[in-house]
Length: 111
Length: 111
Image (cartoon, rainbow over all chains, first blue to last red; front, side):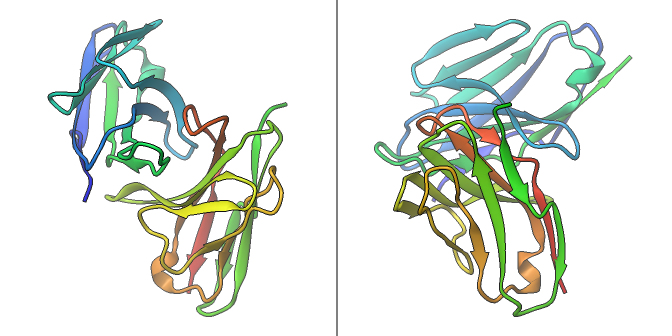
């Protein structure tokens, strides 16, 4: 089976930096996604990593290490609107687009 | 406006009464997918489709059917709904299974 682990909840202060970790044990690997989901809304795409390394996109960065089965999402200069759930998802099979999500990390940004 | 639409947005039904949740996208995307989201379990993929007449199972396909007769539409069919299918359902589409655009969600209650 596929297993994706993320912390359930995190709290951080406005203006700070927070790192949300994701570890995965899957039968294969064909890419890792991060999505943001505000309460009561649909998920929205943040990033996609298929090769090792850091991808930066504005205040958000995502890192992948395939050998360690590990990714993190880094949020800088936190804003109150960043309070949301952050979902890590993996495509476990080459040639397949079956997508497995972690249970998500609920981030609360406090003043 | 590029979007994924789902109907209905809210539905309360009774056990055993067949229902269909429609999903339509106007972005000419090849890939479409259905997910359910439950507290403590996260997003789980039900079915996905890589193109017209091509569908495949996700992690939790039991009790659901899908069809992809046209590129823009991907309905989810519950032939005999049961209370354990009470959930929040999301449809999503993408060009190739990468960045996915989610619909607004359908909240289904089966009594």
